[in-house]
Amino acid sequence: MPENAVFWVERDSGLAKEVVDADLDELLDRDDGWLWLDAPEPTDDTATVLTDNFGFHPRAVQTAMERAHVPRMYGYPDHFMLVLHRPLRGDGGHVHYLELDFFVGPNYLVTVHGPRNPVVPLSEMLTEIQEVAKRLATGRVKPRSPVALMGGIVATLTSSEETSINRLAEEVGGLEKRVMAHMDDNNPQAFLDELFMVRHVLITVRTMASQSSEVLSRCTRVLRHLPAEDLEVIEDLRDRYRRLDRIATSQLDFLTGVSDFYRGRTDTRMTIAAERLAVIAAVTLPITAISSVMGMNVIANERSDPIFLTVLLVVMGTISILLLRWAKRQGWW
Image 1: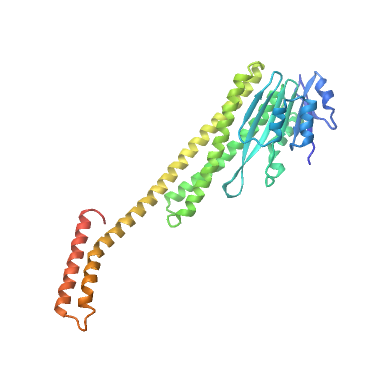
Image 2: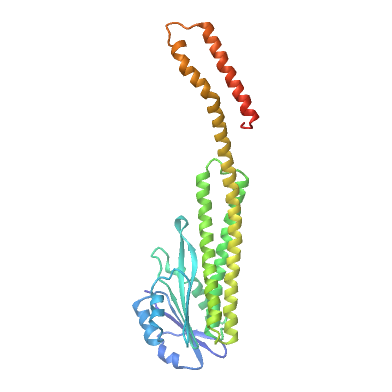
């Protein structure tokens, strides 16, 4: 099980350094900076730290230990909790929800990576955190508050989601080209399966962005006691998720148009084929009826009457021609 990582951030300069074998209680008592604790896996030890060292509400701790299927926000007098997700595309069109929980107070930021599916590597859960931690350790980012650092982490999450949407847009463009080039007209089922898999991923990404935007909107209403610069960070994050929502929605609309065009063309082909089959049935039905009734008297006899047979064939042919002309006037073929 990977160990927790602890960083100490100086309040005035924003410079940070990683602390090995940190005494959390001692760091929390200091007033010259604040700490960032990252817990890669939610374990019983993690729950103990959150409860004993930080004094978080039991409901918030339980939320961090369990899988959350939608974003959440809990506000308390001296801190707040925020639950967000990032999509990860899996096999067969399935999309994993990678959960990241934030506990934000005046002198700490705690991040807990939510329960993960065993098929998801831990490295996928830690991608954004490790990137921000590297920037923090090298001084490339100098957050002035825990909320500012949370904003940097969430901004990295949204950037990853935007990259996912860009890849999906590339796939949608490829599908559109194949539709226009009639490349999959002979295999519509496989093509529609592929199309709806991409659609499912887009819907999932849009859902995450939309729900996260709503939760951050609640943050701006509940956390009005925060400093103005921290509220600006939260407002910027909400705007990022709104933008992702709009981009995913517009891309989904485009994909729906491609799908409707392809399905409309396929349905038209099926309709034309059905009409032609109906013409064939209409033309052959009276002939079949005549031959069925007369067959026993013309074909099944010991000998056929050439004159009667000729007249019968002429009558059947005439009926077929009349029916074909009538179907032509009706526009059936």
